[in-house]
Length: 173
Image (cartoon, rainbow, N blue to C red):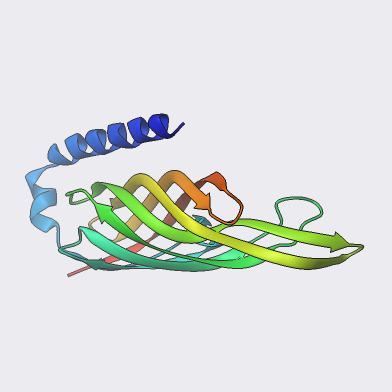
């Protein structure tokens, strides 16, 4: 499974890099360095349904991201929970289309004990994750982000799928 995920991520990066190289000179002339981004969406970095803020550094090739939100119950009998996530993203070159690789620590799993209508021993399990994806940032600021990868829950010994889909705005200077 890990080999398949690596192949998919590598193919995505190659396809996006080729696509970006074919963009017109006008797009490259109008590209500026990204400074901040704000987005909303669903996924591990967003803490379920939530929002995130990106701070771009190293000429827009890296960003530090922090997010938080609410994850509704995933079963008919479980509790929902608030959650947070944080990570570092590395990007390929590109004015609008870019591949990315994200290293993160996020909420991954929830365990609980139920007695009647009450929940006890609710534990939010956080862990490290790695994901790859795609980031589109229009010259006017509209952004779209999609990622997929794997997260590790150390205290449970579980490897779980992770990912994000988000829409937002990116500021440039």
